[in-house]
Image 1 (cartoon, rainbow, N blue to C red):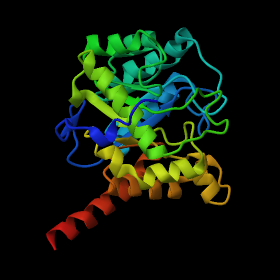
Image 2 (tube, rainbow, N blue to C red):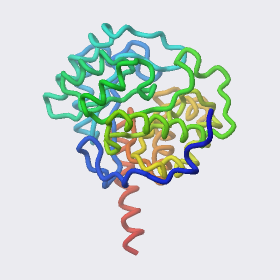
Image 3 (tube, rainbow, N blue to C red):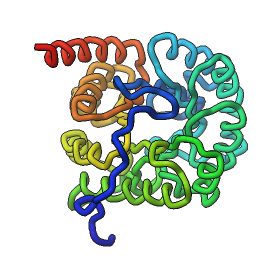
Image 4 (spheres, one colour):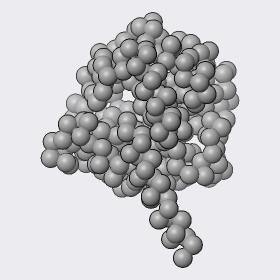
Length: 292
């Protein structure tokens, strides 16, 4: 790794006021719809297109500002899915939700799936590899001029949890994300179309996850909107005494509110209605504090 990027940043993007046409005047909620048989939390729950479409519509009605559709699990040790199978799973869902007026992001690392999903009405590309997995993904996003979410992941889903090591996890994640953002800008992707995600749980131990959440201001200071995905993650289960994924909603909300308090702009969640209620209360308290 070369010299650290973050301490010497002299030019930052202006503070973002919107992302993908959605105002950032308040925290946004991204609902999760996994059209997979093997996702860690809800694999198989929405594997049929009709079920996934109904879930996405329900999330939007419950307060999701956008819905993230994925057809390949990226849980630890997940097996890769071909782009063709991935598209078979997600395209009917993307098309139906987009046609209903739901802002949709496509969660994929494959350029072919990105292109097909954008053609079907998706508005955002969300790539867990920050546009590094598929050589065609970076030029595609630049050509289409669509917003992109760049996530940090060390290794692959098959290797990422095999003893991950960092000297300074917050600094190293910040350096990587800034490098990827600048690579995007270098090919013509506008700074205001870039959102960053530290990849909680992707090649990190529980200590790494907690350090990232505690140090989020350093990532917010990069100047791009920050998306946080802590929903039902394994570290929450460990902190909660071994709770199974679907029993981790209270802990997920606690971590999400901590992230919002430190400047995160978007929360990627499974439990939309519960998160929306928590955010409404949190926001009211914050507003009262500013008025006092």
